[in-house]
Length: 463
Image (cartoon, rainbow, N blue to C red; front, side, top):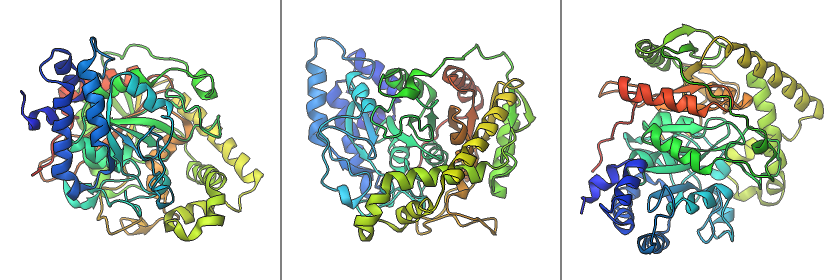
């Protein structure tokens, strides 16, 4: 049998192939990854819940099946603890829900299970996904595997660390303002935030809300493409999913790339700008890279308004009844939307529409838009919020996410890949953005630079 360490080093697609060929059993794969979790998670805190016995039962069912269940048959995965899993605790990162065990899977989880995936557990997240550091009253902080003093990023930090450290080859995440992209950048893994609606969310209370999406984190592009192929597809209860149009076309032999370090308005640290410039220089080997950005004037204010309104609407009652049990970050987020008017909201939507059209205009002359996947490099876990960048104060605790939330605002799909780096440098990733419905274009280009230019995962030094 393959050693536990080499099993955990396999990507999801490589592991699926090994399982299909009978080179190891599903139980072997599960036990190897459970052993990795047992070895590392007391230090890293990637998981809120590990369902070892449930995973073993599922693996035995896979091994007893006369044929493969699906393309992820027997492959262990992690699910972010914001997303319901039947029979497995789902806390939403909140002590209010420490004993909550859903009766049904969220659709994205159900599709993964039907494809044969085995859920090892639930990965850590700040309370309700709101927070710059991946910690809550139940678990954390989730520590960066490249330097445990540093943050893994929020809010899919548990998933990013689980993948980066080989606890699972593939993990689910969610992304509102950058929650798969920032942790991917900090932990040297790849992520996909697809077009809103590409992965349906049929239980989302606001059916036309496109700010938040499901996504995935992995150690390679092939795994992200496989996961999206499994979980994508319309659902009649999600109006956004019905309207997703595939606009893909083949990637040009030498694509045209518009590059921006800051969209003209985002605060971005000097060291990030330098790393991004080096990444753009590397991309010049396979593409024509030209400095350019859409007109994003007013984007920061628009996102602040829309985000605050959605959070106040979704969690305002909790603030009234359970304030003392909520984290300060959640309280701040809810209160930020309490005094908004309908006019405030509609003016933000008006600005959002203009920015979307500016993005569309840019893509009439570019195949991709690239930007940093985080405005800063990882900081110590003891610092709960980013309040300054290079000594300049930020107006709100979410403004450090502007370089990612601008893309959330307009709903364009984003592939995040680790940029090449020196041995002594912290991980740093880039966002590769395409028009809605163009995920295949992203994956094709991502594979090219992953294989030819080294935009790929590197292992941390693990015990």
